[in-house]
Image (cartoon, rainbow, N blue to C red):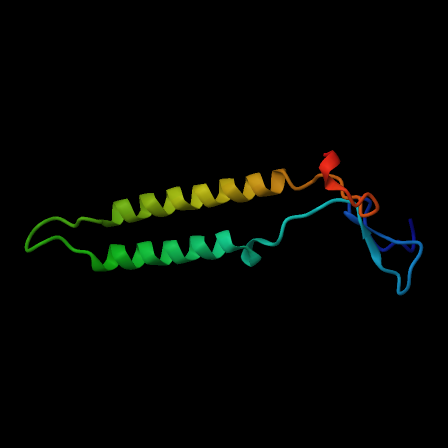
Length: 107
């Protein structure tokens, strides 16, 4: 194990052949969270929710239509939904990767 430089649980292993000591993928992996469209959609909606909660007021002397309690409830529900979607994306991404096969219709 000396000289490998990586732990046994790493999804990439050094390739024995090839130029430059490239790595060979053993499994697929999802992108980092901040590189996904769903993350930026989550951030945009969350910012919009906070702006709406700050700017929407009830009519003269009336109660707030979107008060702080509702804003934080919606922000919490939105965050839970985002976390569940990331969990589902990551849970289904550990299928074996075989570059030699070339035909994905067998799965």
